[in-house]
Amino acid sequence: MALETRPYDSAEFLDDEETVKAYLNATCEDGSADEIARALGVIARARNMTKLAEKTGLSRQALYKALSGTGNPEFATIMKVADALGLKLSFVSAAAERDAA
Image (cartoon, rainbow, N blue to C red):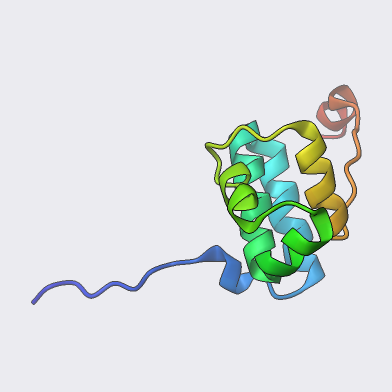
């Protein structure tokens, strides 16, 4: 008997602000720039890519490409997406994080 599988889409589980925050923070802690862009794409799909396109002034196709993890988006695009998703970027000292651990 063959193993039956179903497609997994993490966007289906990003249904509240705390989950989105935890998902993005975890990605930012250990992820590459590509993985962070992909995580923003997953959040965008969870919240409605069409509405995000309207808010950012970018096409859906451009957003899908930029946030695919292989699109190499400009920092300005990341800032527009974060703002449209109601997120803000902030920086913390890596040394302070290491010292706290």
